[in-house]
Length: 99
Image (cartoon, rainbow, N blue to C red; front, side, top):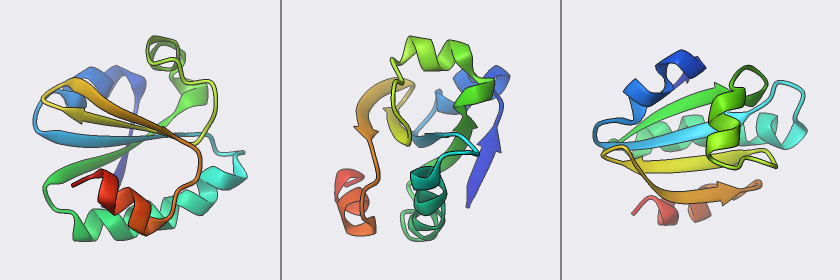
C-alpha cells in the first residue's frame, strides 16, 4: 500500500529501512498513470515502505532533492538517498530498480 505523507512527516518516514517516495502532483497526468503501478508494486515488494508526497505542498523537499520534473521517485536506504528516478517507468523497470 502506498501511503500519502505530508512534508512535515518526510524526514521521519525515510529514516529507517528501504523507502520509496513518489513525488507527484494531483494535476500531473503521468503521475496519475504511475499511481496504480506503484500500488501493484507495493503489494509485491514487501521489503520497502511506499509513500506519496505532493510536491505542490512540499516545497522544501522539492528544493532539497532537486525535483524539477514529476513524477520523481526517491529511493532511500536508512535515510540516505540511493536513487532518483524521473519520469514514467514500467512496472518491470521499477521492480528491477528496487532489487
